[in-house]
Amino acid sequence: MGKRVAFIADSLDNAYKFQQVFAKLELEVSAGSTMQMKKLLAPGQSFDLVVFEARGTAVANLPEMQLLVQELGCPLLVIADAAELDQMSLKLGPSCDLVVHGATSEECAYRVRAKLVDSGLSEGGETIVVDSMVINLATYQVTVADSPVDFTYLEYALLAFLVRHPGHTFSRDALLQHVWGFDYYGGSRTVDVHVRRIRAKLGPELAQHLETVRGVGYLWSAS
Image (tube, rainbow, N blue to C red; front, side, top):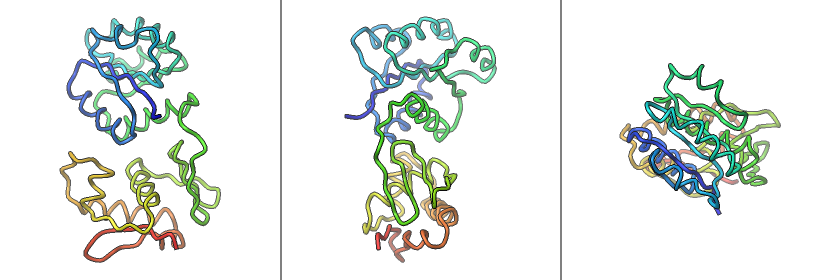
C-alpha cells in the first residue's frame, strides 16, 4: 500500500503544483481547504505526511494544525511565504519542515521525500544493483562504487525509470509523459540534455548501459 498524504491549502497554484508532485511520487492524497482540516485530520485517520499551506489568514491555523498532526503522529511540511520563514521556523517542532511558496516542483518533491525518509516512513530495502551502481528506490539515492552521485530529482527519476524497464525502448515523448508528466510543455530535446548529464555523472562504464536508439529514443541495456 502506498504512502498517504493529507494536503491542505486554499490556493489553486499550490494545489496544482503539489498534485503533480504527489502523482510522480505515487502517493495517495486526501486534499481539502483550511476550513476542512479538522474533518480531514479527524481522529482515526492515518497519514504518513501532512502538507499545510500556512499563508495569509491560514497562518493563524498553524498552532492548531501542529496539534492535529501531533495527535496523528506524522510529520508536517509547511508551505510559507519567504517573508515569514524566520518567524515561522521558530514555531515549528522537530518533525516539521518548511518549503517556500513559489519553489520549483523539484524542490517541493525533495522536501516531501525528505520528510518521509527522515521520519522512517518510506518503504525500505528496495534497491537496484547494476555493476557498481546501487539505486535506492526508498531514499531516492544513487551510489557508484560506494560513492554518492549528486543527481537532480529529474535526472534521478529518468535514470530510475529506465533502469526499472531494462531492454525497453522509450521515445522522448514517452519519457516526458512518464517522468516529467503529461502537462509538460517544453521541447522533447530536454530529455537529451538530461541523458547527457546522467551519462557524465555515471562514468563511461555505466553510461554504456544507457543506449540511444536512433530515430526512436533511449533504453537501458541490462547486458
